[in-house]
Amino acid sequence: MAQLEFYGAAQTVTGSMHLLILPEGVVALDCGLFQGRRQWSREMNLSFPFPPKQVQTVLLSHAHIDHSGKIPYLFRYGFDGRIIATSATCDLCDLMLADSAHIQEEDAAYWNKKRAKTEADRIEPLYTMDDARRAAGHFHGVRYNEPVPFADGCTATFLEAGHILGSACILVEINRSRPIRLLYTGDLGRFDMPILRNPSNPLPQVDYLITESTYANRRHKDVYGMEGELVQIINETRQAGGKIVIPSFSVGRTQHLVYWLSHAMAEGSLERLPVYVDSPLSVRVTGVFKGHPECYDGEARDFWHSEGDVFGRGLVTYITDVQQSKQLNYTKEPCVIISASGMAEAGRILHHLKNNIEDKRNTVVIVGYQAQHTLGRRIVDRHEELKIYGKMYKLRARVETLNGFSAHADVDDFVRLLGPLASGLKAAFVVHGEEDQLNAMKQILGKAGCSNVEAPAPGERFSLLEY
Image (tube, rainbow, N blue to C red; front, side):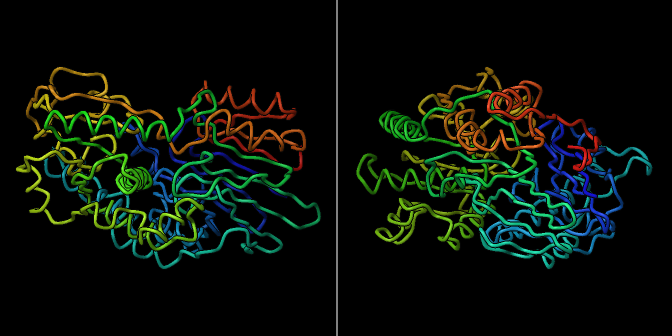
């Protein structure tokens, strides 16, 4: 008998983890960190629905921390199985989980030094660098479209999701007394995005579907229109003698920006100017992108063959050294500075913002979702003063928000990808969304012919034999 239990990303958008319960053990579909308010997220991350040693395998859709970031925690508390993912996802996780562990250790050290008033207030990191290194040795990289056994009579096939490098939808086939076919979408991407191939289309017919719903109630702007807007903003800022500062996520968004800017400069729509990527993690992640051209779409492959590199060879300067980073503060000429973190909550971007937001010649370009209570959100909302490193700075720089860069599928993508599956489903489970998004996805699938659509609550369990 097979059951599904929904834990993370159930009626929320973080901590993705869905559990396939088989007679011989538990298989986790993703194992992500909860992200949000400190106390709530820590409480959620310290809990687990099963003893980790009962988990047999993790089938990992992609490397984003809200999908992969709890994997070292499993090893810390007894898990000793395999993490099966595409080869590109394995390489990204090697970097990202180590970075996450470093953050866990630093956060715990800061709390214990600055905030803990008694011994009882002290905290341990959720996991350590040693845990991340131990996890790295258990990743098993696979190719797209090749079934991989993970339990007796069970296979997983990874299909292109088009979301980030290495991202996949996972087709689970249980070939026992009653065969079952289950598709987990992970995070679905968009069609015609730069660098990456489109999501697999058509997706295979299955009995059960677990789908994200992040933007099921929204239509994105055309991404190539965003490229033109970005070029215009850069040209206008350059004419004013200013700098362009872009807070950007290290995985996916930074590489897309560099690709667009390199493409624009190579074809002549953007006059050459210095472009700096100032983030050690972004630099390392870009190295992983360079190592996986098998994931590129036709356009990126052509650009790669003509230019020798899709990430700005000779056009873009990648910075890891602290002193080189500091030198950007004294650069007078117009330039583009791309730096992490994407919501401007940590990292080198804070230094670039504090040194540039008080100059009205400069422009801050926001290219990603900014959560409530983040510095990035306060910039979008044009707060007159911003606190950075405990000091107040006046926001005099120009602020531009480009909302078309999202790598998540929107309503039209969902209809195109999932609509053809709906009438053949015994049941669909909608996750990774708030109430409005969940309801929108339920409507999409219902209109397309699926009569059983669930939006599971955390901890809710379903027997697949009941449908």
